[in-house]
Length: 355
Ligand SMILES: [Zn+2]
Image 1 (cartoon, rainbow, N blue to C red):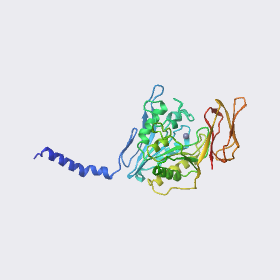
Image 2 (cartoon, rainbow, N blue to C red; image 1 turned 90 degrees about the vertical axis):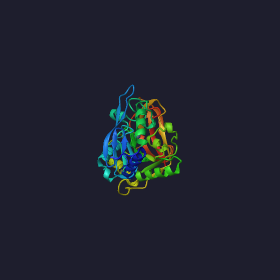
Image 3 (tube, protein in one colour; image 1 turned 180 degrees about the horizontal axis):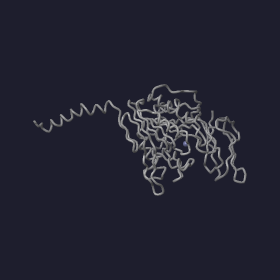
Image 4 (cartoon, rainbow, N blue to C red; image 1 turned 30 degrees about the horizontal axis):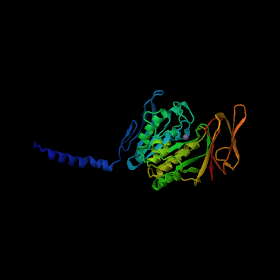
């Protein structure tokens, strides 16, 4: 066998690579790994993002499903369970992960089934039971932080950094009587805002709350959706469901919204199922408790129309003495109201949107 000089061998090797290997990368979809879950195009796999334990808490396994479509397209992250007592999105994600088939999908879908596992398993409202932080205020997280911060850091790295679009699916927490609405956060970047607005309109809930005041600090982006937005990725937060319940109609509404997004992004066949025109709320107020503790009494319900000056709830001490009246600041709509008695200082009592 004749041997070729070194420079020819390199040339032959490069030619063979060019012919057989490089084109595969150019024409095919790419692999995607999220946590422990590695997928090739055409594969659907489930597993976990492992968050190492800290001084006072053990490791956390965040369940994820990756559907790596056969055809080219964007990567969409669908997140649920950022608050652990918000169940319809969690149930919808399980259903969605079973229904989606990689051969029908253009692009990739990352489903985070339950982001805040400690809160979910311990059944806590708002807070992680290991550090008592609100998980949707600690992003982008810290590699060596508290339990919430460490989980957030992994989700930022494994999910937010790897997606092109993100939907953060929330609902009324265990104490929140909440109507269906979503947050459209405007960033001031016209191209990004246009794409985000398209997500908001196509998810299609009754009300869109137009947010302009979210922080622009990349190191302290606080919210899941804001963390994606500050990285240039269109993202919305949605609210469907209430009071820690599991109504089938809420689960189906979460599904309709997320399917609408996939249709809008041309990741699956079909047109978004738009049932109504959303009402835009350009201004809102969250009225908070000014007292260390007490019992809260709501006087209105979710989606009620209220008038300026109307008493919508009040706070008492344990002995029935009135501590604080909750008055509507304008003619508007009740986006959510706390419907259970416990109340501590600084916690929201009602959110009212102005028409
Ligand atoms: Zn929430």
